[in-house]
Amino acid sequence: MDSRNQEEDVQRETPADAKRCQTCQLTACVAVATTAAALTMAVLLCLALCAPQAEQTSKTSGKELQQCQKEHHEVKLMLHAVTQDSRCRVCPAGWLWWKSHCYFFSVGLQDNCRWNESAEFCRRHNSSLAVIKDSAEMEFIQGVMRTFPQFPFLWVGLTDAEQEGQWLWWDGTDVQHYTLVMVEWDADHRDCADLRENGSFFAADCDDYGPWVCKRES
Ligand SMILES: *[C@@H]1O[C@H](CO)[C@@H](O)[C@H](O)[C@H]1NC(C)=O
Ligand SMILES: *[C@@H]1O[C@H](CO)[C@@H](O)[C@H](O)[C@H]1NC(C)=O
Ligand SMILES: *[C@@H]1O[C@H](CO)[C@@H](O)[C@H](O)[C@H]1NC(C)=O
Image (cartoon, rainbow, N blue to C red; front, side):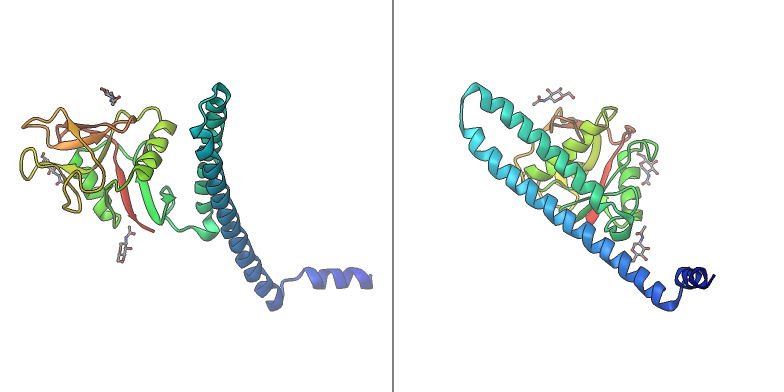
């Protein structure tokens, strides 16, 4: 009997237990952060391994490169999953974290919108339609598009509504300020750029309805 009482005492939550629980949460958080760091290392390592293989021209290296790229992609997805962990979430639920930014892909979560309505949605969520600043970011966005094959295109923060033919990113910079982007199919009545899965931009009617991607700092 005595020992059972002791057991019950131990099981009852005391203030000390509560503290331990907090520590436990903190530990979990640190563990997740460590995992994220380890995965980042894995990505870097994989990239380092990929690079020399890319230079080889033998038939087998193509396959290895493909495998390596596939693993690289999977590790990146795992990294996203880890950083979505509710205990250490840096982005709101439903947003993806990538390189100290949070991204919202509307597909399946919101009805399709006109370009200006998409922009308004992003603004209401303290973000803006995505400004794509380098090829790595473009690859990340394309990767997400590939995960959702129903994406016909994405609205991003690129328009020539102010002056026909002068395409500007949401932050006011010229379309080619960050990367050598071209907007195909430009016409008077097509003032908003849509991004295709293959990384091409097409001019579209801003009143068309589509999914979009918001971006903000995490
Ligand atoms: C978006 O533009 C349409 C016309 O193109 C207009 O009717 C609508 O009010 C605009 N919406 C917002 C949120 O600006
Ligand atoms: C946007 O930022 C403001 C001010 O920092 C904050 O009060 C508000 O909750 C934020 N809204 C969202 C949707 O994050
Ligand atoms: C990208 O895809 C679109 C169809 O969505 C196609 O019209 C275009 O030619 C493609 N661009 C390249 C560079 O492959």
